[in-house]
Length: 318
Image 1 (cartoon, rainbow, N blue to C red):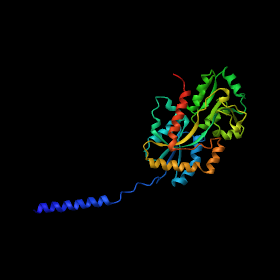
Image 2: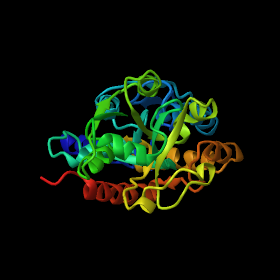
Image 3: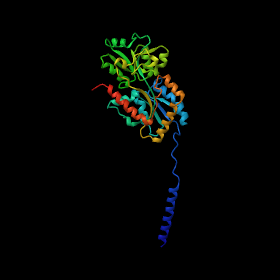
Image 4: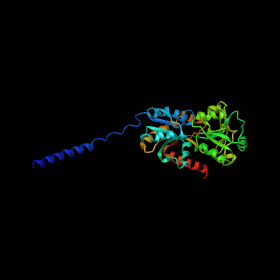
């Protein structure tokens, strides 16, 4: 009888404890963000990706209330820096610049990562690209380039093989021009290559070399667009010459797949607020970019998939 009484008493105490635990409030999730967020730039200092990160990092710090140290990790057309982000925990404390040139690498089946490995928090800038020559180059017009490239190989400075840059060069080689891609992972090396005569042509975005354009050190010779760009009305657009190639050059902010949706939304919302400021809109204009560049997380994946399909149109046929 005593054993049954003790068992009943213990069962009653245990049941009461369970009820008390069930009624207790669940522990709150960690506030996000509660510590610095690593901001990876998969390119060297001075280029468009680096410029974007250093432009928005201070504004993001104000929105998210934590610091965002910018870290440059260049190499492999952006893959070295991307891999740094992808090997970090999916907790939202490592984000990365992700651009069109790196997306283009997915056309190679040997690429070890896939688009499903990232979650874009937002596309921040879209801008036209062009072929540039040094201001004192003997190549004065695109017709000069076509004539010279039929006689001898011309070197084109690009970010890396397999990039969107490279696709434009390949497009013209298939048209019979002798253009040779020469990769320069560091933007500063790519820009000085045509100024120092180590390359004949540079592929780049208009805004990325604005200081060189303003300083009369280089000039666009063909802009990849459907229509002429207002700021350079004397430079032909690719479409008007029958070259219907204009791969969008975009730069976005990516996070690792598997990151909590609430954390992705927090970053995306902060980016939207930054993109809506007069300061950022003014910067886009200064960069010769689309004033409606921003695409939030909800639409960024679909945008990238469309861009990848466009790139595949211009990839070499095997």
